[in-house]
Length: 511
Image 1 (cartoon, rainbow, N blue to C red):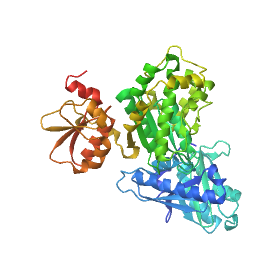
Image 2 (cartoon, helix red, strand yellow):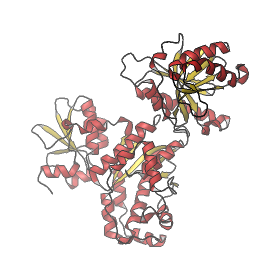
Image 3 (spheres, rainbow, N blue to C red):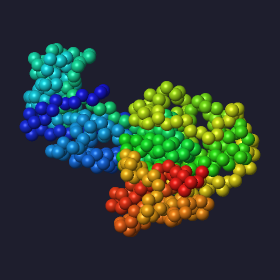
Image 4 (cartoon, rainbow, N blue to C red):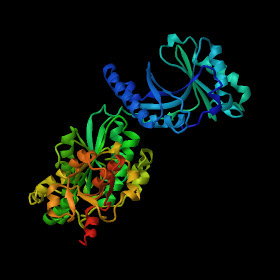
């Protein structure tokens, strides 16, 4: 059901009433055994409280029998999210079937229920076709009224104000839920994400590429309660990395309250070059994807992840034939979850609109440095293993050792676009810091650059001299942007080379 705002002038008309968000458990939760349901419900409450906290709106989350209520604090400034926006926000917490903005009244008789319902629904039904739907919740013995008599009595009280009663296709429905103490009135429900509470299904890593497929695949696993970190194997440089980071940030902000997801960026340029130099052309794509699985598996081992998620579907590209997927899967020992395996592109694109990543994915270009003209479509494992045997395995190890891991919840990507944060060259008196690895620094660095690798800089920047001005650079501008933003928030003067190493080479006249 689409969201219909409650008439704003009704809130103050009911003396002693209160405005609550009424949340209902998803069907996945209600069918679990008691012990499992208690554990999952506890996790759901944690996630809801985390979502409320990050919203900036004061509220209390209360479990009451088989319902969850969120008691919203007054917002005299009007700067926080409104009731309807809070309903939409909490509807995105996995494990919730629906959310309603409800007005609650205590009752002791049918007359109490009808009178409060009449005052609540008067403006909502005025000159419109309407219906009344009532149901008892909790112990039925605590509610001596039957649903049908509530519907008839309240419908009769509202009928003179409306155009007519219409039970089949009403313009507005007045809903009433009764327990033994209170009646809850609402006119619409925000459809929830349903599924299982995030974090109740273990941990995994998702190979994120930035297109339509992998974000939707990730969302499907999040919906089953699996907490995800994202692994991005960068083949397209700084633009591709930033576009994919924005998608990961959108997934984290909209759907992952209650967990602390990370974005692991692995520079795959050297891996790609090694494949092109040592592997026969027709096997490039298959070997590349096996290397990506190994990168994801290495990250999963560090975060105690139990599986790898990909956006692959059968037949979508040449490497995704059934035979090739079988060979690719042999590149990792962890289970590989492919929730889109039987989906077609139109379905995936439509679902990306629900996830909220559609517009971001639509802007991501197709990045792949190795596209063979005649790729193998039915590769044999023994042939692929023979190709890989010629590769230098240390190339992938070095790429993993130098990867960037960022906590998505801590990032303010909008501030990274601030022109004041971007350096277009080194000015007199500024301290230049190279955030790359020691080996990368030794291979080439700006002649005026000091070495301080990114993990060390993250721990040390709060002790930097506040009288100094700093310029930072890294491989692609991701680490430097994040650290420059953190330093500015701490009151330091910091800028960064947004184009990464390539831009810094231009500063000194390099290629």
